[in-house]
Image (cartoon, rainbow, N blue to C red; front, side, top):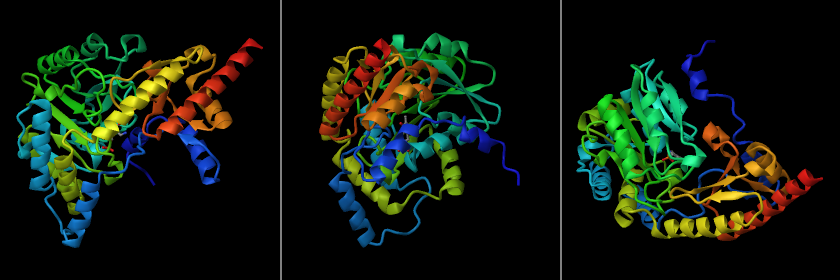
Length: 395
Ligand code: PMP
């Protein structure tokens, strides 16, 4: 039987990006010790306010269908929080509740893009972007954010990539995997490109509450951008609620109307009792969980100090997000070979960052969402493995 051609585009290039994760997961399933620092999950529990609210909602039989675009209460809570955080005047009518920001990425693509359109995305980029864009039959045009530019995008190259087919720019600040937090000046230049070429901007701000250096700017708050920006958010990272699958899109009212029609056909809405819990989480922690942010900041500082002390390796302290980028280019092996050797010989699983884009070649992406003692032990094992590679190189 025949499948739509887009299924191949959505599947993307066959990728071995997760090999280290599966190797470590098998070790753990066999009862062996392994440290998993691959996926962007966290050791923090979801807030008790949210857990309590979902129990209450279920006990009160809040189990009927709700509005496909999300409950009025939750859309108001999201609009209030976003308005306070970003300075953008935001109304509940601009908000669509989604199944995590991932569903928001795909819904935004389906509402904004036609087949044959192009989307400019700075790489390294979160791995699902090309597939999400491909659901709408559009294609991704990536533009480098080189390591020697602090993994910040080459804005002139973004403008040079604009063609008659370009319809949008998608970006994430803070970035996954690099942790780069785009500056106001950079975002102003990108906003200027959008205005001059009449482009949409899809701004993925799932790590917006996890900023350690600099300031998180929502580009929708820049002059003339509210009418052409869709801001994506979720409770996954900031509120340690990844498995709840609760996210949102904020855009112009007409965008929200189009998205509401899509939601009727695509999801028919998000579970009502989870939306009640999301209101509780946002009201209790409008800026995300303060302990989680403090823990990531502490782990970032101590982990990077330990990694920087390892001869031949150097760590890029992320300005935001939940990942550290470790430069292993001097180790004599590729990031992939380093990562495979590290998990097999030292039982520490991290991701080679190349699969997020060529600008990340030679870097490992390491998750900070694990207990302090595990991260500390990982640094000891990384040092031992790097020393072993250095001895082999010398031999
Ligand atoms: N965008 C980025 C940059 C991400 O890193 C992730 C999750 N890793 C998502 C979107 C999707 O997040 P969720 O669907 O859990 O909200």
